[in-house]
Image 1 (spheres, rainbow, N blue to C red):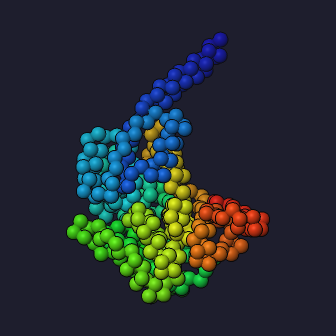
Image 2 (cartoon, rainbow, N blue to C red):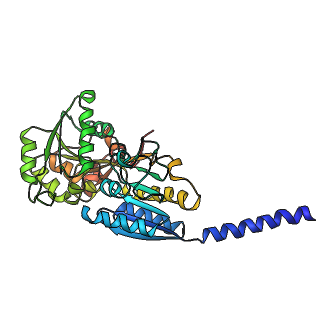
Image 3 (cartoon, one colour):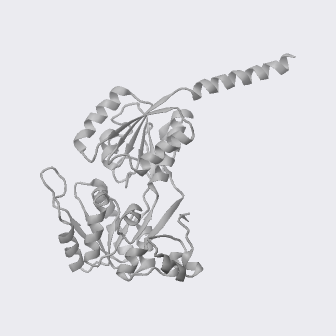
Amino acid sequence: MKKVLFPCLLSLLGLFASTAHAQTTKTVYMTVWRGCEEACQGFQDYLKTNDLPVELVLRNADRDKSKLDGFLLEAQQMKPDLVVTWGTSVTKALIGSRQDYGSQTKLGEIPALFMIVADPVGAGIIESADVSGRPTVTGIRNRIEEEVQVRAMREYFPVNKIGVLYSPSELNSALNTEKLKQLEDKMEFETVIETYELGDDDKPLADQFDKKMQRLAEQNVDVIYVGSSSYNLSHRDAFTQAALKHNLPVASAYDSMVTESNALISVSNKYYRVGQLAANQAQKVLFANATPGDLPIAELQSYSITINMAVARAMALYPPIQLLRFAELVNVDVSKRAQMGDKQQTKLSQVETR
């Protein structure tokens, strides 16, 4: 009799312990750079969908670096179960670089998780693409490598000169441009760089898009590439309209520059899915007692190619069939769609990267 009851009793005790653990509410302190956009929403939706008992404290820097020190102090005093950072500027301000803090962080023993950091290795946040090298830090890699970006552009049209325009105050943009330049010899192209003039507040002065695009056009660039720039993303309409005025196609790592504006093509990871992946990583830390530094840096296993057909028609740059096989098309004219063959209508929004 004891041999039967004892395992049952253990099972019941285990069930009660598991239930009590599941009901323990965890606190996540999330700091974002430009409001609760797609990644932030994806993170929250994952928590709700999986009914995870998490109290989310959300702070928005609203692109103002002067707020970040206050957020760091608040997080240090609050001592949440996890700090989540969005973007390079926020992550460096709240976690700190390995150069300055080694394997430690500004947060002490508080676990931290970063997402939407363009180059976490180049920014000094983590040791390598696979591991953080810091016991309390984990994160998500969401960037599609520049070599993949250039190859996708070349599937569309010849690319010998790539123009970039960014704010020198954005570290992620500078790092991204440096990665592009490192590919010049290997892939046989030239990078043409223009930067915005900054005001006393270290932000770009207004109304520079047309002048800068004209200078890039005069240097005969084949495409304008937006790899990582919160400023260009937030001003995407003015940016892409200025490019179109000078007959310059825009290729972007931001899907929304194609779907919500006038960029021609994007190769990207959907930010919403990045946010969901980050929440899955957070779940391991919060509810599976995983040590952040023991977790591999996570990344999505697929990416999306999106083409704006309205821009393609306006520029007379119709995508080749081999690209259409994998691309998601937006702004496709209904009358044109009926004339397209089955192969050209194939929409595979996610392409396996490995």
